Image 1 (cartoon, rainbow, N blue to C red):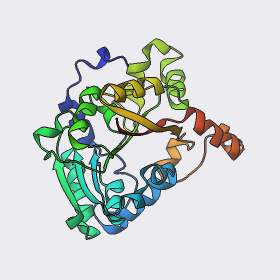
Image 2: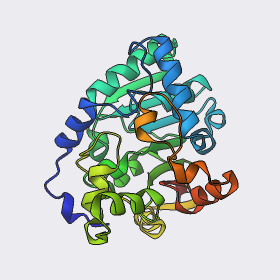
Image 3: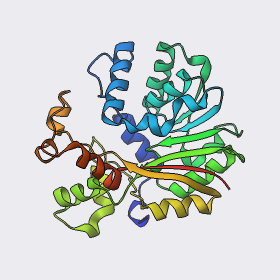
Image 4: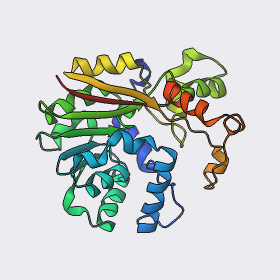
Length: 280
C-alpha cells in the first residue's frame, strides 16, 4: 500500500463524503425510507453484486452474534438480522446510519440490531468490547485512512473460533486497469490517487486503498488472523449513463463477450477481493 498519498486525508473528510451521498442511496427512485425503496435497493444491489450473499453466508449466522463494521444504509445488516443473527452495526456516516435505523424499523427488526455511530479506527471508544462469532466488513476498511489500525481494532471483538469476513478492493483488477487508462492516460505511477478519485459512483472519494492478495494476507497475519479463503469477483459491465436511469445495458465490449468468458474475468480480475479469516 502507498499510505503517504493519503496522509492529509482525515476521517472527518471520509465522513463528510459519505454523508453527502451514502453508498447505494440511489439504487431506487422511490421515496427514501419506505419499504418499496428498501426492497428496490436490496434487489438492485444483489442483482449487480450477486456474490455478496455467497460471501456473507447470511443463513450461517442464525442465532450468532455479528459485528458489522460499516453498515451503510443497512442492506446486509437487515439480511443478517432477517436470518436470525444478533447484529451490532457500526457506521461512520450519520446520514447512512439514520437510513439504516429506519430500515430496521420498517422491517420490524429493531430488536435484533444495535446501531453505533463510530470510526472503524477507534471502535473501542464507542462500541462495547465483547466477542462476536462474525466480524463482517464489506467495502469499508479500504476507505479508512489507516486500515492497519482498523484491523487492529477487530482483535478486541474476536475470540478463538470467531470468523472475519472482509471485502477490500483488488489492485490487480479490471477496474483499476480501466481507471488508469481512462482517467490517467496509462500513467500507472499515479494509480493510488486515480483509484481514490474514481473508485466510487460519486467522484472524489478522499481515501481508497487497493490491495494485492499478499498485502491483505500480511496485514491480517500481523494482527493474528489466518486467511482460510480468498477470492475475487465483480466487474461492473453496464453503461453508467443507462444504469443511473435504471436501465441495464452493457458496455459494447461486454455485450458481445460470452458469459463464461466474462465470469472467468471476474474470477481473475474482479474488483472485490473477498477474504475470510480466523483467529490464530
